Image 1 (cartoon, one colour):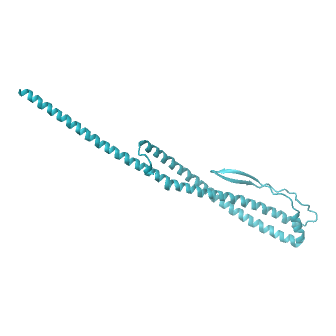
Image 2: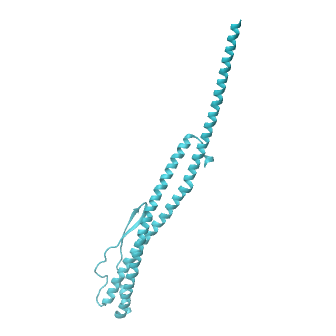
Image 3: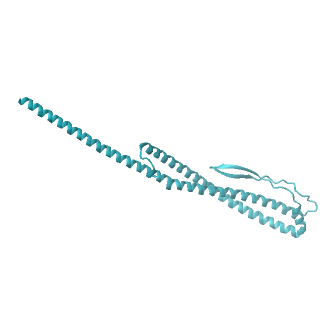
Length: 224
């Protein structure tokens, strides 16, 4: 960049301002990255807990399912699964986390009333249906947590790339410009100072010669 910049004092001031802006931007991005990393590791714990909960409720639900098939017959269980018509609704909002848009999902409480007629349905089949409702909740919780985790992770990578670009490319480039401009200005000042000294010495020499000529003329007049 040094070859493309005009080595003037105004350019030096502009480069200093750009350096201050870039350095401040890098500091802000690093603080943002550090905050996101903290959120990321906190979410990792939540994601692991959600996965463990999903594994636990799934085991319980499949145990209930096997029991229901054994006691109430596979045909009865399959018939009940086909009869279910209830929709599973969740409430989702988008929140801003350090500039990252992440989902916030609220899981509504399950209603106590069944979406099928309990007549001629065994207790174990009803229990299996209830347990699989818990599995659905656990799946939604895992999906919400891991989606949030993925988006924060992507933002951390993007922020790190921007910090690296500023610290390794932009800021060193501006510093090179500043050094170049200062070097040229210092050289100009030295040349100007040298020129001034030469001019001053010439003026003094001419003044000294003029005084000497005047003195020689005065001596000549006195002799006459």
